[in-house]
Amino acid sequence: MRVTRILRAIPKTNPTGFNISEYRRAARVPENDPWKENESWRTTGEFTRAERFKGALPGFGTASVAFAIYCVYEHLFLKDEHHHDGTASTVTAH
Image 1: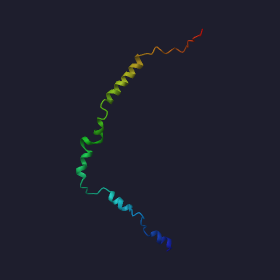
Image 2 (image 1 turned 120 degrees about the horizontal axis):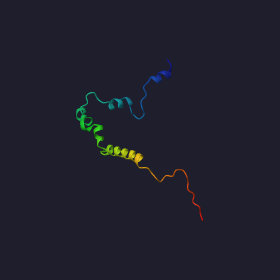
Image 3 (image 1 turned 120 degrees about the vertical axis):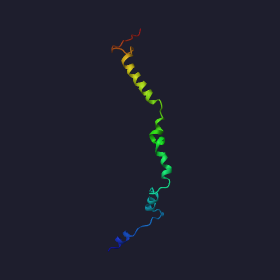
Image 4 (image 1 turned 90 degrees about the vertical axis):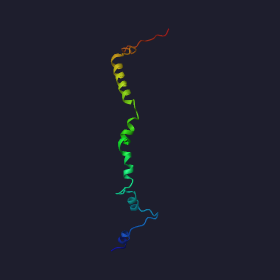
């Protein structure tokens, strides 16, 4: 066996002392989490994400429907008489 293979097989220590496998093990959610029941209220009932943001814009639906109705009314019934029919009137200077 070559020396390089032996040197590669030796686990290298990190010069900073940081061990990624220990970090992953510590960051993992434990199987028997003692706070799981105490924290479950955050994601149930009136504290769900949809419930929290439901009242963020209380009149937005009504306002958007009213605006759409006004746009249709303006397009159908309010004709703008200020637009010309394509003929330009020339003003002559005296």
